[in-house]
Length: 200
Image (cartoon, rainbow, N blue to C red; front, side, top):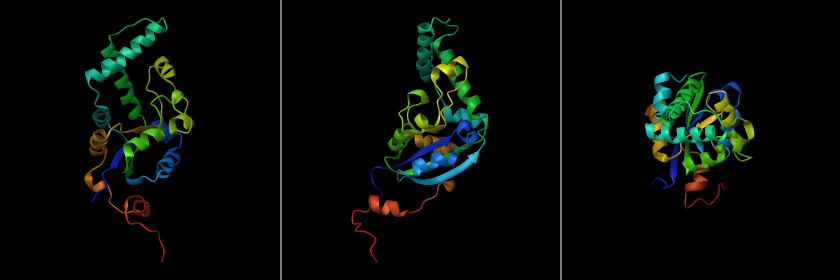
């Protein structure tokens, strides 16, 4: 029987992580938790696939745009668009960034994989991500700098926020045949109730 907390999560090394040669470092940090990689590919994101991946609706755009507008007002800058338009501008910047260079798409499996990877990667903004997280340790971008340059935050890596989102994202980037099923010794130690060591 499958363990009730065993999950799959989608992870992507973004163009800045690829260009800075951090693929191995990122994979190493995730694998050190005990999560098992079950799919991996380097690919270019087509505009169509990138749009399907981000798939943000007007509600999301409005919420993000309202934060942008509030920041503009706080800094005494002019507000040139309504919130939803600012939100759509964020999506456009994300699409431009994701299609600028190859990405590395991966699927990891294990106990509460979604939460483990989110904790390991850190918050969306590198500047405020905790020390010890991938974003906190390996990059220094910020929302303010990205907004000033009218671009997406360069934060190295994407991960799924929830199990259902992981399933949706995996289906965009991988066919079922590309996701490998196998057993690792770590799983035996973690999931087998009767594990009593590896004595001969």
